[in-house]
Image (cartoon, rainbow, N blue to C red; front, top):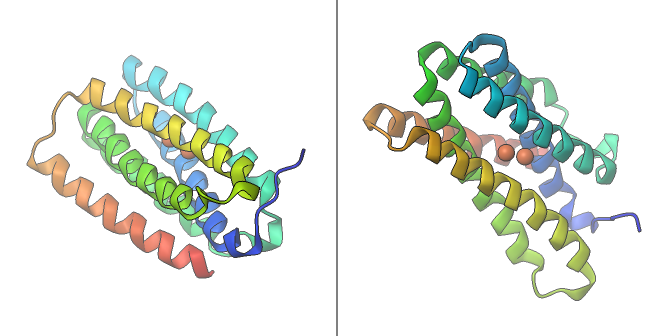
Length: 173
Ligand SMILES: [Fe+2]
Ligand SMILES: [Fe+2]
């Protein structure tokens, strides 16, 4: 059965589409720069998952409903992967940890919106599946980074506010 989303969910799915596009570009940037074997293995694996997420969302969200600013989300994602790759391995893992912490919450808000509506149970399961993947990405990043210093935390705050802004804009355009 083909998954459909209620019209009221189109703006939210536009933010998901923008976010998963950004995620693909984060890993593309990391793989372009990093020469660290752990980072490359980690990123290749995650990139495959993010591409699957993007395909899944593209099946549901018609082209005309996608963000008109998609090139900006690609650049923003690319920079989010590129900058830490210039700094070092731990910064890369910190970045993934903070990005995925944000995405986990973002998907949780959507689950809350529909969790008691039986007709959206299939949609809820799809979002839950996306969220589960992001949680495992977050946990893998934490396992690699182990702990974060003040620099990582400041960068994490920047990621969080940038992501919030991207969600607010892509909800509309
Ligand atoms: Fe994803
Ligand atoms: Fe992810």
